[in-house]
Image (cartoon, rainbow over all chains, first blue to last red; front, side, top):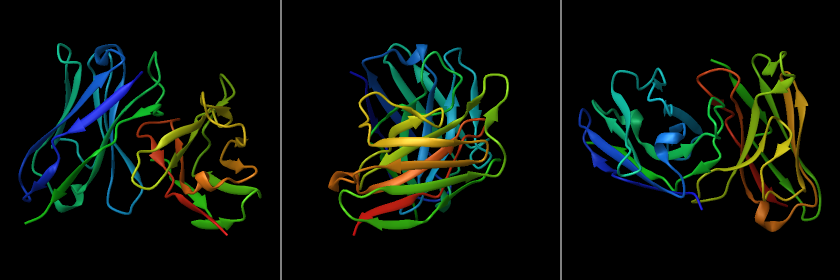
Length: 120
Length: 113
């Protein structure tokens, strides 16, 4: 059974940094395309980033240059390092899988999400 | 980016009746080489993550009840929920995956009348 468990969210001041984790089970992170999708409070869904099974990465314009997606194959875990955080980054961050074998950008499994609040 | 626009923003339907949600994309998401529409639908219940319902505009994800169906092509799509059940109360999102970045509609809130 596929399971995704996010952690690392919290309250952070503007300009600060935070690293989110997504521990996966039931499949191998390194063999799949994986994404982060966020949802501001009371708002809709926004795709943030993807990492391909081969390691290539893509980012939304709103986070490019500030966020970095990565993974630790030995821990079967996905990460999102968020730097220079802004108030508008406040959201629940979900990790999600893209269907195998990859290349199709819809999301078939989702974690429960972790809340990031950027505020002074 | 492709803009996805859903209508209505909210609707209330009686139990056992049909609910219809529309989604329009700012450009076609039909890929001519394989004749597939790169369009997905999700259901999000309060306090839960989104759940994939439909992909390829009309293919139901495994385990999704057959009262959920998707239709449409090109730029205009519909999610239909037949025989509405109380557990179908949720926000529904369409999403295109024709181009990067993938983009979502603003959501349609479905309630019981």
